[in-house]
Image (cartoon, rainbow, N blue to C red; front, side):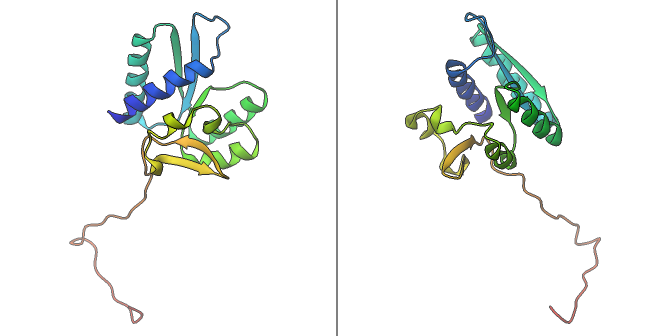
Length: 157
């Protein structure tokens, strides 16, 4: 499972650079996400497995709808609070970068770590890396049954 490996790597490295806990023996990481139910289960399994391996790390995973995630993160980040990780789509990067409430990943992770990822999964914006994708997609398409839909022709075809 690639997502399990990506989540494990990201959490491991993130735990080395940041934590929400005042207790140095217990690291607390808060993740907000908007994963649909099937993907949510995979994320929760990966986090559970990671915490079993790293008992000094407590990870809190909270689901938020798209607009709730965006607005709550903006308000929280401006106040100096909020989650440690936002696990969501790339369309959030623009507003977050404009408000200066996210940090480019190349300022956190070294080049050798970032070079492990397929470049197609790296989201660069204004010359900085802001997101490492675990999946490429969110495509919309039209599907129909040709036996049930009549074909029409027009003079313009």
